[in-house]
Length: 262
Image (cartoon, rainbow, N blue to C red; front, side, top):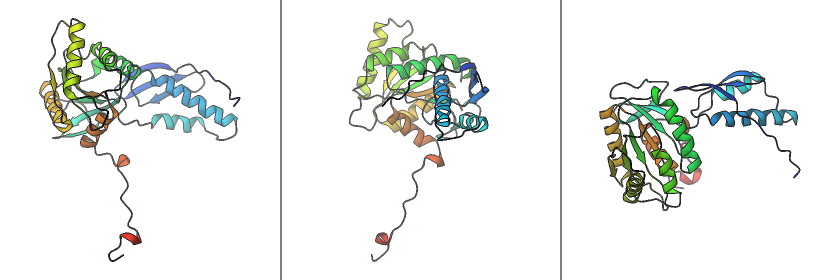
């Protein structure tokens, strides 16, 4: 199509905290991005360059303020999303409630391939000093057609998860990997890696039961609860814990056909 190739360097990351990234653009100066993970500096650079390209072509005319507000208001549910467990079985964004005793951090990430898990582990370990400090709990579910062994290998390299309780479950999808198969895969990989400290690994096929078990362990240990391995799993957990009006299905409209006697 004769389209030009534009190469863009990631923005400079000046800080990453629980509230996201503080970035710097060569021309636009400091920028705030409420997403976690240094890889988002590359995504932000691409977004800014795309806007600039569309502006040069005359399609849009974004001001610096519009781009700045756009970055500051980005939300990506289920992707490195940091929440706080509150109430009996509820969670809210971490900027609305600080993690306290009995209300630890919950991190949701839909990472389901090697690259995604690598990014998750890097961000998780960088944030470790700012997360709930007790023994962490990992709730994981996967699809059987994924690179299961390499993905779990990357996850096991996380310093944050070295003594984690691992809860393997299975999602409601035809391609799911069974909870017991997943737990066995984790144990097999751990034994091959000659892990010095044996981890507690449990298989709970029912997603709701696995979620409640993981929450209970996380609260008891005052440690981080990490949910990852599948967007199906992250969606199920998030839907059960987070009241998010922006993600609700719209109410069904009544039509003439639905009216009584129609």
